[in-house]
Every structure is written in structure tokens, then in C-alpha cells.
Amino acid sequence: MVKPDGVQRGLIGEIVSRFEDRGLKLVAGKFMQIDQALAEEHYGEHADKPFFDGLVDFITSGPVFAMVWEGADATRQVRKMVGETDPAESPAGTIRGDLGLDLGRNVIHASDHEDPGSNEREIDLFFDDDELVDYERVD
Ligand code: CMP
Image 1 (tube, rainbow, N blue to C red):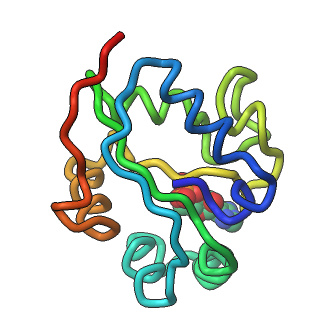
Image 2 (image 1 turned 90 degrees about the vertical axis):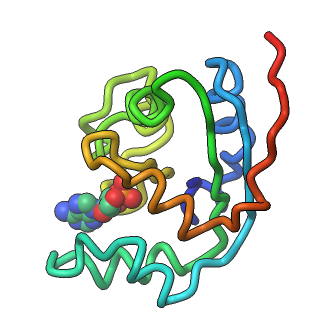
């Protein structure tokens, strides 16, 4: 998901291009405003963290662009392309390493490949089944 800072900075196209260029297939995309309830559910695992309220405020502060990408080992590959949580610790070449500097405003969220089922859970939170489109990507 391109976060509000990424949307405001005009980075949707750049981020979509990176995943397309890598060979991943876009199967769903939604430009939307996250409400308080969805934000609290999405970030539920961080509910006891000191930064939780700020995180919810930030993710609801403006529109996001939610996406579903498909491909071999897609969740792990996307995480590698996204970089570390803290952009300042993300290597050059990663999305956060190239496009961000601020831990709170870190441009993009991606499902955690080390948390089994997090990708399915997040897809279900943001998309109805009929919003996932089946087609063939030709390389
Ligand atoms: P994200 O990948 O969306 O998942 C949880 C988010 O919490 C993370 O990106 C950061 O934006 C945010 N986050 C993690 N640690 C901190 C922190 N110490 N202070 C503020 N925000 C944080």
C-alpha cells in the first residue's frame, strides 16, 4: 500500500513501475481513504506500542493506494524491494532507501512474509473477492 505520504508526494507511479518492472502482476488496486476502524484492525498487532495512535492518525490522514501483486514468492520479494521499516536503515535500491528518510512516513506498507497468512488477512481487509482480477501477464 502506498501510504498517505507517498500519495501526497506523487510516488504512486514510481512504485507501481518498480513492481511491474520486476515482473510481478498487479491483480488489484484501490485508491481509498482508510477510516479509523480499518486502521485499528490493520495495525492491530501494534495496538500496545507507543507509536500506535500516531500510526493510526497518519494512515488515516489522506488517501492510500492499496494493491495486490502476484508472482513467484511475491510477498517476500516485495518486502525485499520495500526495504527496512526505517528508511534510514534501508539500502539504496529499495523503495524506502531511495524514496524516504522518516520512520513514521515510510512511503509504503507491505505484508510481512515472516507472518504466515498476513498477506491473505490484509487482502481480505482491503478487497472483496471480485475486486481481484484474473488475467495473463505476458513478458
Ligand atoms: P509498516 O510497514 O506500515 O508497519 C508498521 C508501521 O509502524 C511501520 O511501517 C512504521 O511506519 C511504523 N513504525 C514502526 N516503528 C515505529 C516507531 N518506533 N515509531 C513510529 N512508527 C513506527
